[in-house]
Image (cartoon, rainbow, N blue to C red; front, side, top):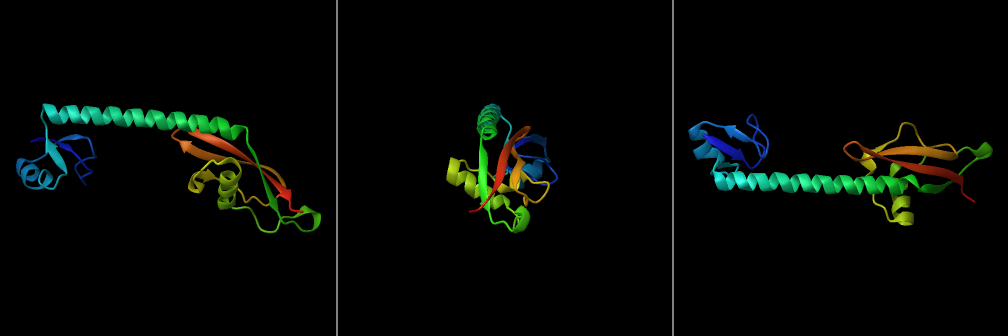
Length: 149
């Protein structure tokens, strides 16, 4: 029996896939539990609409990511830090601090888990941080550590 999965089903398939399942498994488990629906014209049209909606949503998210990427390119974020002798920074600047400064100064919300920080930010001057904004779209944040007065 052919069914369209409404949710991911382990060892069978992912949401939105059309699979061939045993008649008893489909009628007694998948359909009553709301995990699948029988394949017919109406369900195929629904599936097609859902795929189009998802595609449009992904295109919109990618456009937003590209516009955010252009915004981030022009921003230089100054973060004041405590320093000691010879300009040494006490501790280092965390991604959380960068996110908070970005939100406070530029009203841009970013996800700290998507930041790629290769080394600790513990030297005065410019640092560049890469952020994954979307699939194949990366933004670069310029962070300048300045001495706190």
